[in-house]
Length: 392
Ligand SMILES: C[S@@+](CC[C@H](N)C(=O)[O-])C[C@H]1O[C@@H](n2cnc3c(N)ncnc32)[C@H](O)[C@@H]1O
Figure 1: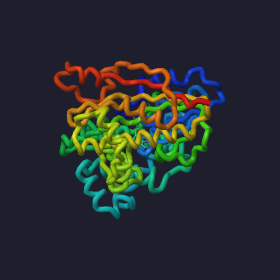
Figure 2: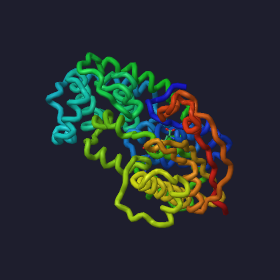
Figure 3: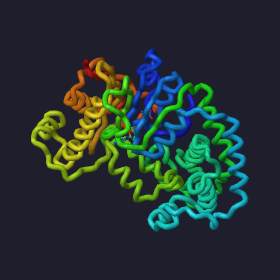
Figure 4: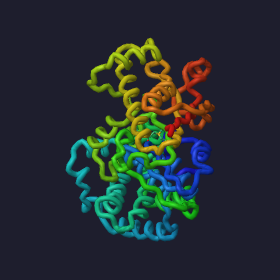
């Protein structure tokens, strides 16, 4: 299977399909943390109505493109037109306010990009974001994905960094001769063949917003939820994605704020630790230490808010499928799956079927400790698929 865009910890395609196959065609599916859009893309190809939320603007772009029908030739023609416009303009004649009026973002770009690619990305950004060269938003979205996957890469392409696709960019080169304009049509062909756009039977709706407060989703309006929440401390999505997002209208400080709101980051807020929750976490994770307990507490409270919101929007007698693996924090195992079950029960769900499956080598996200031999490491290689039901 080829993918539209790299994304760390995407859901296994067969889990998305199992969760959605055989649903009645009038069902409305929700993925409140849609990531790369594995669930939304599968729903769109099955002809189901699907809604996605994600805080990460790049995840929204990818999942929207993954579930939106476009005419391939129209996108190819638009790409040709875009490149001919790009060749007629100088980088100094374009104005990108979120960069040109922000020192921090300029410094960030100067660190991660060499002059040639910076000039080309400025011009592309002008025609795709600052002053879109066509009004068709679906086509613009596909072209943005084609540009972005030249930045979010394993080995350096448009940037000076490697490992951007795994969320941990490292600046490994200082000079770069990569030609973004020349690579764009090839990247677009990759996106189009991954999309198989003719197989998309219904366009998805995606919102950039918080799964803890989905204001656009009415109470009891959703027939089925399939989702995978972030594991505590496993992946910092924004670290890699901001290399791409600074070219699509976001400055560094805005991206930092989005990161701080994301579930699963090692953030501690100044919340008062409620005794009951603290006791519960001590039983589950007795030895993590005070600071880690606060991080855990925030994560657990986030999971509770997520499952409360899922409970609110689901119709009675409907199911929510969650996929989550376990992780470590400073060497301590965190049983995210147990925390999620506790959160779901607190929200009113009953816990149904649970399966544990091995995570294939190419989808692992945690470094293997002790050469991969310890019991802890073995547990890190598994993910839990859990079905929660909102009873009638
Ligand atoms: C494990 S990934 C989802 C992967 C997805 N199922 C796929 O197949 O690609 C978790 C996602 O949750 C998103 N996320 C984190 N906190 C969020 C929040 N408060 N609201 C909405 N999305 C959030 C992250 O941006 C990330 O895209």
